[in-house]
Length: 323
Image (cartoon, rainbow, N blue to C red; front, side, top):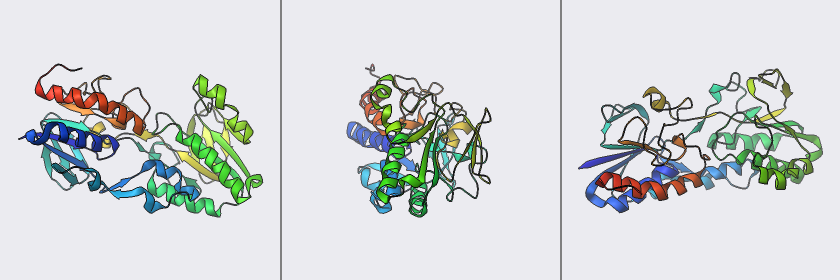
């Protein structure tokens, strides 16, 4: 039986497994691999710090979203050998394939920024892009009574580019509801030249920061974090002090992509922008945030991409012309 191997059971990988199983039926053996048996509803991470969602509200078993007929393996990917059509898991299991779909996403990588990852991470430095980070931030906000509250977007691209802005507004509302807004100075620090970079959004929404008295520090390219003295330091030596820092770390793709030599500088898979096919290997495709597409890294992009990918991929397998 011909084999399709899908790496990653997030939004893109799960959708691909469901749609391809319906289209191909028993003609192909479809296997999907993910290192985590739990599905996390990532948009919910934004609301856990403010108590709108409880941690258990965003967790469900990934197996619930996969159809009968799709093989589901829980395991961490250790190595991709595209020349041999082989994926090796951390426990030594080898998975061969005729066609490979990489959908392992993009992930916050604080280790890429000097000083960011250390003993203060989870104490005075937090993120809300991970489940553990959002829960720790909830506890930190409950204890925060005042001071400088800094939200720092380090670099683009990131998952859900609008989320840091949403977080800033939710935080401001949270401090008002707690009755401590006058004790909190909120600062939004970004490498972009404005909070809202699209002209239409800037024109209609640009006053939202000023109205809420949220200070904006644009064009700030973070070089390092001095957690001992609670300072952000830019490449041009600007320094911003904080009492509580919420960071949006650099996002990077899977390490195995880099080690296989199949990714860009951020480990996102090099693909044709119209077919999602690897520019290096004809039998390899990448979907969602794992691909280096010039689109927003957001769940909605994966939904739109699927409408093009699935019929084209099925035609490709059957040797028919693509759309």
